[in-house]
Each structure stands twice: as structure tokens, then as C-alpha cells.
Image (cartoon, rainbow, N blue to C red):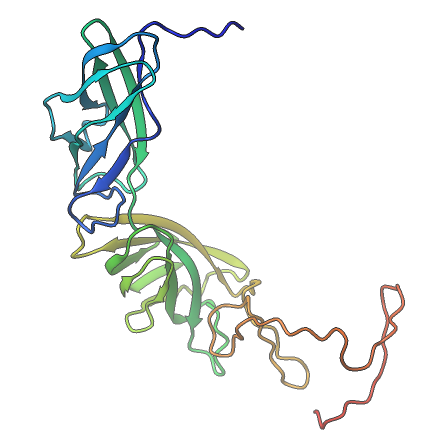
Length: 307
């Protein structure tokens, strides 16, 4: 391939700088915010370019409004030199979905030539994800499972995996499953900050399972999460399947014949669920010389009383 240098070529140097100038002013693009985008143009050609100016437009007219419609002046540029122009202002409409990739078009012209460049950027915001669940049932003792014929309280945990806090999170639980009736569909989570997990312990869902529901059955639900009183509207739907009369990996184990229950740090958020903490035992205690066989037992004396 032969590499050539054009006689006249004006191109952006590096990525443009985008900042929000209202809203939460966190430096990221969110819905319902005015933003500035600043370009640096460089002369990559072999001759000087005069009267350089640029205009901004967009292909994402449903979600973006260009505020700065007049050209921005970049002056004259000799070969190898660059200049940073005044910022263009644009507005992200409130109805723009979080995660939407918008396209901005930069049209550059000189006295003798013109060029067009596209720039894509993602609209950031809160991202609410379904995390886990726990069941408070009517059985005695409580087995924390949905069983046929029961009315249970459902508590979900949700996590904000986005780049913005989620204010006043509300939810609605629905189901088209023939064995499921939603008695109380509304749940409240409050503000869920970035990277945090919240639960609707105070305002839980109430669900009835039909007595004819088979055991080892996965019931289908839809969880709608949305924010209130935020700078922009946010809503997301999650399809969830929950077991009826079926243990799952996030359940505790037991009871055994003696009556013991076992909880791991991967179990759902029961009060007994431990917080994982590594404790290194290498180099302490008495080493057991365990052979490389698949079934091996060794009996040892414990230095304390244990039932």
C-alpha cells in the first residue's frame, strides 16, 4: 500500500470533549441535559487552509436538539498546526433512553474544500437490574419457599449498575402465569445510588400460588422498575422466573437429621447468610495427609466441645 499525504486535509485531532452544563453536572451525558461538545481541528495537509469553520448536526433527531446552529470559526491553519474552537451546545431530550447511542455530524469547510465527520456517544444514566429474591411464606416453621396453595410475601433486591443515582425507585410486579395471582403489585425501594443494592422490605409484594400449581414449577413474572422525581424519566422491564416448591442454588441447605441448617455466602439474603471472608489456614493446625482417592474419611479429636 502506498501512503500519501493529501494536499489539503482538516480533521479532528483526538476525541472531542463533551460535558453537561446543567442537570446533575457529572461530566456525562444524561437525558434532559444541555451539553457542550468541543472539537480540536488539525491541518494534516501540505498547504495552509484558510477560513476554516464547522457546523454541527445530528442523525438522532428524535432524541437530540442542536442548540448551536451557527458555524464555529477555527481561523487559518498552516500544515501541522491545530486550533480548538468554541463549544457547540446540544440538548438531550428527556425521553431519550439510557444507553441510546446518538450520532453527531461535524461538517468542516475551508475556502476551497469541505469534509464530514461522524461522532457517536452513549447517553448515560441509572440502570436498575433485578438482583435476587427472598420468600416469606405461611408454613410453620417458615421454609422461605413458594408452595402450592400459599400466599407469600416477596422481597426483591435490585442493583443500580448505571452511572447515575436512581431517585425514588418504584416498582410493579405482574404475571400472566395461570397459577399466580398478584395481591399487592407495588413495591418501594427509595433512592438507589450508583453501585448499591436496595430491597423492598418495607413495601413488599404479596403473591398467591394456586393450590393446583405443580411442584418443581417455574412461575413467570415481569418486574417494572421506574424512578420518580428525577431529572429524567427512567423505566425498565425485567422478566423473572421464580420456583414453586423447588430448591435453588441460592437457598440454604438442611435441615439434616440432627436439625442443622447450612448457609453459604452465595445464598439469598437470609439473616443467617454469612459475609464471605477468606481465612488462611495454611501453616497452622495439624496437617492431614489425605491420599488422592475419591472417598476418604479421617477421624480427629477436636480441642473443644462440639455437638
